[in-house]
Image (tube, rainbow, N blue to C red):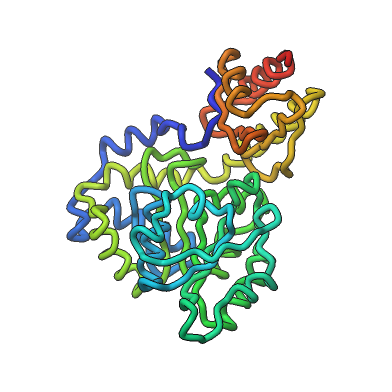
Length: 340
């Protein structure tokens, strides 16, 4: 089976498994797990922040950020297609008691003028705008890599109004590799940032939330409140350290495979790639086939290919560590042979 559903399906490398087996551990709730402490220090340094916190998932990291930044009744500004709005179960309202103020963006690029217009005036009728959330790479934007120059424009709007910025950087490493920029080129324009270890970097579990020491101290309590206090978590942290030290630059292979896939699929007369393939995500429009995306997915399964629907006539393919160029070529051949 050629699994192109997501980079979350990657399995830990042999080196990760060995490191997990041998990991030195302690009780992380007491701050005594040396491997987790090492991971958090490494991540904070890479991200250019004072401190970092290991969390179980990207969603948990985003939610802890919102809970720490905001008060009940506040409002946060984000893209209407952002992961926090689209894929996190309404958690910002359920847990933090805040409401989203969404902005329609063009392929994940938030317009600084629209952002400025969305910030609430100081009026008792309005909720307080307490946070701006960005996403990079932008999942529903087709894995687009948002350059630091654009983030700087948004940051200056936020700074002008004294509003913090949280970056959902689940695939920020992909942006950094695709654009040839250090992580700090992006994170300098954020107050806090969440990055995933368990997507393209291949770790089995976990994400990192980073920010100031004061923020992370407060976030640690929210992690505990959410049931995210971990004990001998070093068995997971060991894989995360390898992910950060050894799995970042190889993301370029995923990007190359995605571009190869996009070029191949575009040769089918009824399929068209609709995103600029910056990183490891390829979106194809299947409307010319006359099929619904769910039907198309079933047709792919008959050819031992897995993908995910991304709308009624859009399908997403994601490249990752567990796929090689040969499998990409096999997928292209099988899809080009499909009859509709």
